[in-house]
Amino acid sequence: MSTLIGLSATELARRIAAGEVSALEVVEAHLQRIAEVQPRLNAMTLVRAEEARAEALEIDARRRRGEALAPLAGVPVTVKESLDLAGTPSTFGIDSRVGHRAEGDDIHVARLRQAGAIVLGKTNVAQCLIFTESDNPVYGRSNNPWNPECSCGGSSGGEGAILAAGGSPLGLGTDIGGSVRIPAHFCGIVGLKPTMGRLPDLGRCSVPLGQRAIASQVGVLARHVADVALGIEIANGGREPASPQQPRLGDWRAVDVRRLRVAYYTDDGSFAPAPAIRRAVEQAAAVLREAGARVSPWSPPAVEEALVLFGRILLGDRLAGMRRALAGSRKTPQMARLLLSTGIPLPLHGLLRALLRLCGQETMATNLAAVGPACTDHYWCNVERQLDYQAEFAAALDEAAGGPFDIILAPPSALPALLHGASRDLLTAGAYAALYNLLGYPAGVVPFTRVGAAEESERGPGRDLIQRLAQRVERGSAGLPVGVQVIARPWQEHVALAVMQVLEQAARQRPDFPQTPVDLGAEPAPA
Image (cartoon, rainbow, N blue to C red; front, side):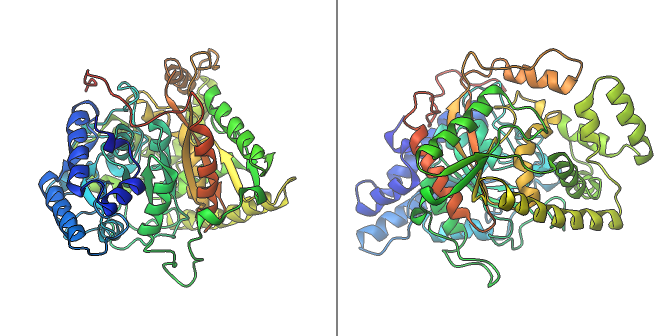
């Protein structure tokens, strides 16, 4: 394994600019690493090796001529399959889109390339970008580099896997319900979703079209917080806002963590977290307290109602648009189950939920409540309630003892990396991330620890099948990475990044820190 693949994007850019290493050498090292790990991970959907080499040679020639280099000149990057890259497919894992070729680059891909980055290829996704594992009929299933029996997360899971394995130092994903943060958590890397609306959304295709109350947001993934910060600034087109209504992107290096008030919680009541998840948040809170921040326990308001609201907005058309997009295409088992559950006639919902509760299936009954009527009146009422909840949440941060709070620490998910196929029943384990899509807050994940052998699971026996599946996920999870979610107030990405940097520095000193790139060993992962 070349030493170059372990370097940060920032350090690679510095070495290339200084002439200590050529852009071609850096690109070749990462292409070789991709070739080594792709059979085990199936993280890449496309590799543009020859184009990347040609772009690297051009950057090396410009450096020799003494020309000024852009901030990411020669640095390899990867991008999520759903983001347009000129001349390549953006299928979303849908058969009928296999022949699609993008006419141009997504604006954020274009900005990375304008900054000198070299796109090595595109990475795998969940079908229609709606699940917490990356599996679809077009490209197949991606594996977690820490354990091939586990998912790398989704929907930006291919990014999480290839970054954790050292195939790329920096990548772009998207996040509508945790799709950047959950892969970061599952794979032991860093990810940040900015404030909803911070980054422009121009011409990007999405499934379904037109739903803007909870909009998909481009985010950045990397192995280092400083790289994510640089990636966000480049994706934003600099520090200046995209519109006059937005605040300027702040400087994370100028934040004094000692002046911050930090709230934290380990359980929001939606899905009981695994012991290692709780421990990570508690230890992260202790790190910030030691760093001089004022840290207090806190409970977010009305979480169960908020998560029902999230589902009813996101599924406001009961997946009619997604059904149209999938017409004539193969569907994953997860997608088939979701389409079935959202197709149950509403008059039967009350009876079915009562029967589920009678049979001890409390989690399934709660999940079913997130499917509401597909009508404009209900949708508008739900969006109005979303605005009310955003105000209630902000007031709870302002008025709580120890507040007003600048930062929240929380689990990214109730569980570590899921077993393959489990996402269809364990979507609500990721509700800890989805809450901040409903709110539109900037939220990131920083790797912090790994699951200890003696703390895998505390779930007792019971009839609830989803909780029993969660117990199966937890048992055998020893060694998997665990991240901490860091949430800031709207437009305060720089504050979240500053806190993430403090946590990263502390966590890297610990023996249980999830070191990446992951050494995958010699045996390929099972398909």
